[in-house]
Image 1 (tube, rainbow over the protein chains, first blue to last red):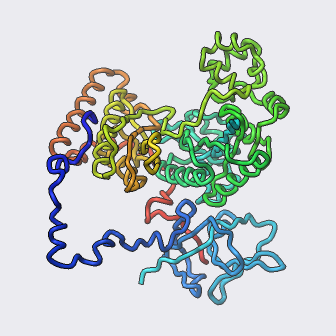
Image 2 (image 1 turned 90 degrees about the vertical axis):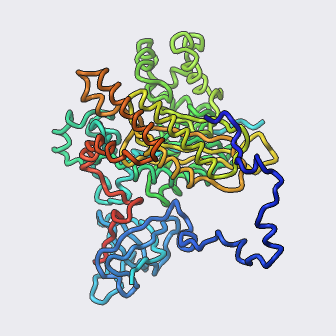
Image 3 (image 1 turned 45 degrees about the vertical axis):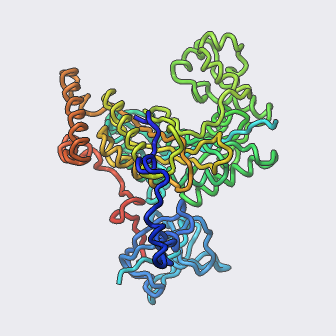
Length: 142
Length: 426
């Protein structure tokens, strides 16, 4: 029940007792790091700019090896930014999600593999195509 | 004072749309999602609607059509839907200072600060942003009352308006379009009222708004009158930014004094979650989602203000206290921001259904139910004494049948590392 006010017991009992920490500061330097001790580096902050638009996907196949994207890697995909040419994208193409480098040319959109002898996909009107998101980072175990 | 303008953002066929985001092979194909307890249809793609399969129908009644038209059937994947819902809500929050999350797939906002001429454009921006960021298609209805906004979104879904956004502000557009809206599709008019109205020759929303107020009040009471007045453009319902589940249990209380420490907040939330679970068991039900809402004291102008809510889907619908507490606390830690003086916390349980056991026990009703309640209260007592999970496995065993009914559940694409969507690089 929430009938009695929430109040830490210690404070209630000894409101004016000087804290031990304060007296210790008098006998030596406080660690200069103590003010920052709770700020750990958070990979989310580094890698994810738009949490509501960011998804993780797993790679199957090696057609993007030369772009540093290998089989089994996890890609961080941000849907909030519209990709420009030469960016690595996830495309929804004819019922599948595929990863390719997108190039916009005067002849239309190309989805280019980053490995020799892998096919470049020329999009035609028959294709069901939508850019699903832009790949922003690769998580690769070494 | 400026007149209020309301917008409602309503996800189209939400559960089906969530499935489609990660599985493009389902685009333009008939798809439906089942409730995971009783095999009823809870979400339908437009293709399924066109086949004449009604909402809420048990699947077995339509097996033939489903097979014939190769309809893809999914069990509910509440973890996925809950995650996608939170994404949509957080995007809507970028467009308005206050938001009323009305259900897992719809929310109201106020557009009071938007210049008059650009409502339609603003609505389309919201719609396009949500689609681009999440892949979820939404309809947006804009009107001078919440009921008119809902009517607008209903009409937008049926193709009125532009880009799934309909602004219903001009009197002439209102009367024109409301004559195309069936009275049963008006927000707040249930099936029974709809029948009553039709018996008296009232078939459309337009007819209802032209009906004599006194008659409406006599037939449908004050709540029905409110709906009719709102259709006329008279504001009766305001934005309610607090968590207020439509069909759910809530447990809340304002604190005796402002609380800033997460430990104390955790204690409070655990307590409310526990009480909500008790209420749930009292009515022999299980819940599929738990929500937490926290807020500072809005009337205290000197304090920095913060409020937020979160809905966490339970992996398996349950009435089990420790499980509900655990997820409520996960929710709390996600929305809690240090440095604020909190005034109130609310814990809610939604998507409530009667537990399967009750159905099994139809013929031996009361004794078994009371026995089960005894077991659960026993569980609670023991757990309180010995720690949260001491008899957890027994309870998980009781619920094992839930797992079996999730055969057709799609991967939990956004919450489990092992179940991420696969992208092809061939």
